[in-house]
Amino acid sequence: MKEGSRSLNFIEHIIEDDLKSGYSREQLRFRFPPEPNGYLHIGHASSICLNFGLGLRYQAPVNLRFDDTNPTKEEQEYVDAIKRDVEWLGFEWAEERYASDYFQQLYDWAVALIRNGKAYVDSQTSEVIASQKGTPTEPGTDSPHRNRSVSENLDLFERMKNGEFPEGAHVLRARIDMASPNMLMRDPVMYRILHKAHHRTNTDWCIYPMYDWTHGESDYIEQISHSLCTLEFQPHRELYDWFLDQVVAENRLRPKQREFARRNLSHTVVSKRKLLQLVQEGHVEGWDDPRMPTISGLRRRGCTPAAIRNFAETIGIAKRENVVDVSLLEFHMREDLNKIAPRVMGVLDPVRLVITNYPEGETEWLEAENNPEDPQSGSRELPFAKVLYIEREDFREEANRKFFRLKLGGEVRLKNAYIIKAETVTKDADGTITEIQCTYDPRSRSGSGTEESLRKVKGTLHWVAADHAIPAQVRLYDRLFSDATPDQHKDKDFLDFINPDSLQVIQAWVEPGLKDANPGERFQFQRMGYFCVDRDSTPGQLVFNRTVTLRDTWAKIEQKAE
Image (cartoon, rainbow, N blue to C red; front, side, top):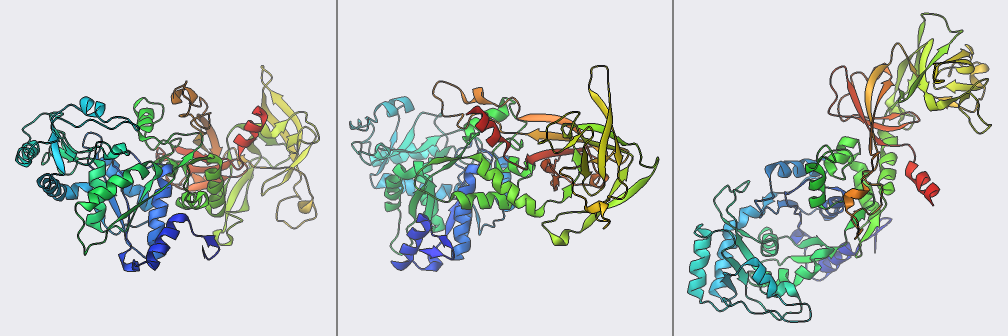
């Protein structure tokens, strides 16, 4: 089945089949349920785009629900960051919900399970409980507390709730089947004692529900029709359904859990634990470091929401996990930025160029297009004068015929300006070129319509006028890890693969029109790549982050390595 030119993914097929077999469109409701224990990363993008995309496709509400059942790891900072990131990606949620909204209802249902003989308080340590679980081929061992009386279980559970016991003294377990082939069904823990303040409920509770007990019941309370999880939750589906069996009423919609595969990204890690380690140990500046795969990091780097949405659409939804090359995300960055980013001049590694026959003290203003991909973007004026800066790598004293940039005796066109010819150079005591002397053809100005202005030369260089250019710090970001799968090596730690060249800070010169650029604004430095103004910028000190190069430079590196 196709929608327009796009084939439906298998999740959409499930929903279409449900609509044919009795669901109404009015019953469709989805949710994105992050735990607020870290920042969202590119791995979450597929889930965000899937759930909110389904909401748009079916005109159905999508809740943003925070799975906030572990006060030891969750913080309001993470809640705020998640909301900010989802909004930035362009999505709106119908309702903002929290698992903690349902603590009382979950507790009441747990009491009902105890009364029905389907839950009991276990007073063993977590280590002993784990040892009794058995193996996939051998049944588990019943807890000595499994057959406690209902009255004793109710008393202990209420006292757990009232804070009478220390952490680890008791847990509440579901009473299911210690011989089940699915080890998750072997009397799973439903509640544990935690004497920690919660970011929303403070110290109102000192027992907290486990994920498996919370998730499905929260879906049921919110009447979520399709609870979409990543593939590692597939074994949990049986438990999800068992818990629902205990509470679902006949006249209420029963949520359906279905799973899709994670999409891992090459040259990075997306484990929250490992990302937190990178932050805490100072390998990166913070959660929004532009080298991080977090949505916040990508935003700060200059990535657009459209690029991430298009990336998620391209990789699609599948049933098997695989590693997606980061170059695909970079491709979508370039595709979108090419359409929207104004073109500007920025010289990253400058060498002084003097046009010896240009009038002393004169400045002329040349017109330049802002973005040839956008006819509505208009144009700007660039100052041109006798002394310029060009990229050091754009000049060689001697070069073969395949070098189409500037060389002694050779000609190039300066972008939006004139054709110049390199005549001589000046060097310092170490032999480093400090200045290039050139002549220019005053009849060759771009756009002037003269015969000389139409003369073809093979090279075109970007430049800035030395006396008008403004200094800027430029942060050249690259992939944080040199290995495609840094966390999949059994004999090495993922930190062993940190790329020592993932950040290079340089002093550059940019055209004067950028002096009032604001944090978050994106530009294409012509011939150099796409750059974004960083929040560290201050009046008089611009800071730019390189978002992505104009071409996939890593592909060339990997080809050489092969």
